[in-house]
Length: 123
Image (cartoon, rainbow, N blue to C red; front, side, top):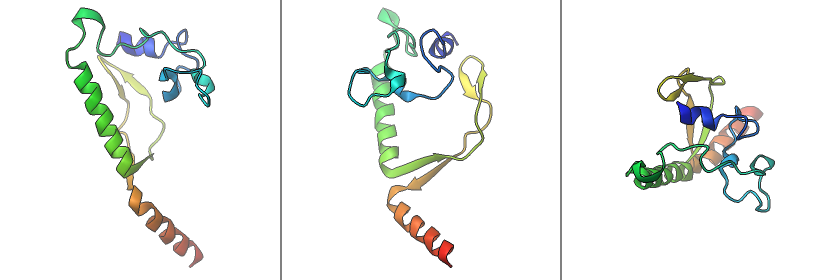
């Protein structure tokens, strides 16, 4: 819970309650970096795997697996959120207060869907 509270702290992040993934960019000075990344947060602002000698031994494997999984999903699908705005429920871990409703649209099928929509609109 401490990790969640620190990650949402207004003292570390501007607009801490908004979903801004660019706040985790390591190179905020890079050309085209969003304004939200202008001041990099402390490297200790979020430590989901802890730190130091007692750090989780599966950290690197877990991070690698998540990266590969997310890359594969985003290569194959366009992901859309179709539910109501979510709020967080604080327990041992943060979790959404309602089921998350995602729609996965196959990337190869996008053009066919657009063509069908245009045909339906003109008919």
